[in-house]
Length: 438
Image (tube, one colour):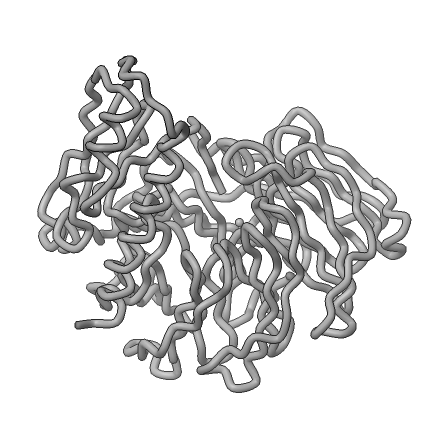
């Protein structure tokens, strides 16, 4: 059996057991019933769905903006699970929406030498974007990537408001979710446990949280740049993609025919990837994991920096790693803030300084400026020349911020329904443009 398929099946079982444990909040049940809204997926044939999943069209409105990626004079904006909007950013003061790459099930991309690598329902898709207006048929490598169950099961529709999500009859290998039917059911705790507690059935309890999600890249670079929330990273002739608890590795020396190599398993749930030279820094729910890629086909574990449960993007500048932890909602209960970790000894990372924040997402840096997206508390710009005394240079309030990409001459920031661009100043930054993503 294909190792990716096997991993998927094993994970489904583990996930089912985990979610059953979550739903069993009480050992004692007195038989009392309560009303619950249960969402059941509406499905279509996955093979046919994938065949129709890739197309290039004229610009369309952005429905649910996700991560951003910069390449040459373009900015690519992910429309969560729907595809990629292409903006001509030749003039950062006036970006222009020029095309939409329909790519169902997409959340992340990475680009090298005009080849765009993207995820699509757990597959790796390769697109030749040399001519944005005339992209040839895509190459698809099935089951090359498998991300978190609820991110890649095949749906491109908005999660409905429901107390539980019932995946009991859903088969991720053959079906795609194209909609939901929400039913009201009267259930006791014992009935919930019997109905969803075994045989691979999954009942996922929703907390109602929604998540949107992007080092400096020269404008003529052959490799583009994502933000700190990225799950894809190209280093040399290799593409690394983080998933639920492992790193997928691809040899892309032949850009049109990537080779799928052995996965590297990580001791924890992981979310983001960043590199400094031949060292990978993996952000996860339980900590930051450091891997050596001197042998690029086989990332080797070096050490980890463990923290409480939280969402954890990371960027690295020389001997310090800057980690934002967000501890509210489903991310965990760790105190939200900026953690500065000394990595001068890679085998023994050590926390050097903590700064409290409201609810941070992504971050980035350009020279001595550190940019932190503090969620609903806006964009914060710090002077990081002294890590023991970060100085706040500017605070852009009244905007909701998610991630940044520091370019050579300007800063890209993705916020709620808008793409912002800023010009660097000596001790400040200045807004250049706001592009409405709705």
